[in-house]
Image (cartoon, rainbow, N blue to C red; front, side, top):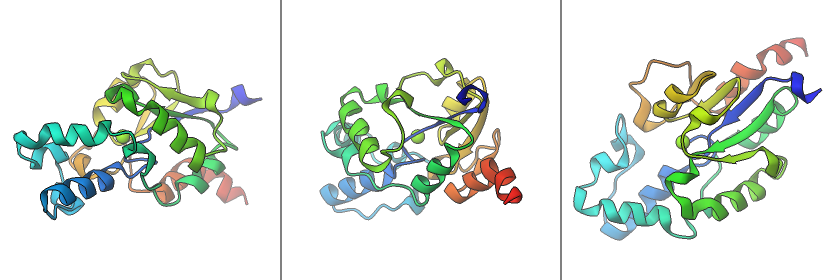
Length: 185
Ligand SMILES: [Mg+2]
């Protein structure tokens, strides 16, 4: 039965988990600055932080607790649970970008998304390896590599991207992927 359901892959950082908020919090705390997400429109954090501090930005990502403390994006838990009724849902994170993050990411998923089985979690590098019908991701580079239908999750750095259908939040994911079932209710 499950084989008949479309397969949906979902990215973690900036889609399920608010990584940029934690990144900004640590950076602002250490350097006494007040950079906000509003300052990052169309840019990555690396684009607004001077190069001499880039190593520090990398160190935040490598710290053992960074990925453990991230806030869950609003409505992500409820909508993902509902999506499981109609899709074969996989979590696909390019965790190889920060190999030391595996344990923290896995434990974060187990804590906040216990209804997603470990067998449906994929830590990868290049998402062209995914064989799925859909991928929801904030990174246009990964969506370009993906061979199914890409859906761009809105994020500060991708506001100029027009190549993919865009969802601004999880309510829009719900509307895009579960519209048919809602209408039949
Ligand atoms: Mg991401």
